Image (cartoon, rainbow, N blue to C red):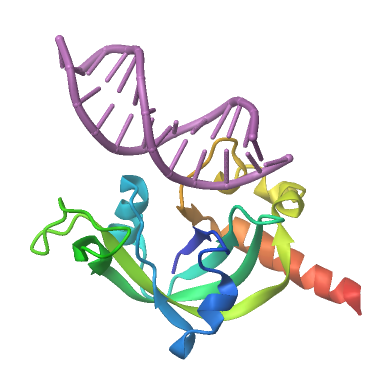
Length: 160
DNA sequence: GCCAACGTTGGC
DNA sequence: GCCAACGTTGGC
């Protein structure tokens, strides 16, 4: 099992939107970056865990945890003339773009802000925290995953 | 293959 | 709104 971080602008699609879906599940479509595509097509597997990150948010934060329930599917929005993500170069017989399906597991409540993540020593090398990073699908190491879950737990304990 | 121009991302 | 960082496009 591997760990990932998926970015979404909450004004477009938030973790709450995912929680409100039937079966708390949605297709992660519309990714139009080749590096992210390669992860979705080749590396993200059923059972992998995902941090749902809110970009362009106030504050930017990790808002929830999801799991991958389907992997390596062609992205149908690439074939849809009416979609913002339509791509005439993507051939249904040889798709250019891929998606996976994810299901919400639980919210991170309260969400862990980017600033707070930056204060965790174990995350010093995390891709998300590197300046200029724009990749919308990022691998997360097990150590990073565990450090973030530990932060979530310690904040809950502090609250009691 | 180079690279300038342009578009997008995303924190602040 | 600003701007740094990065990706894509297209002329050559």
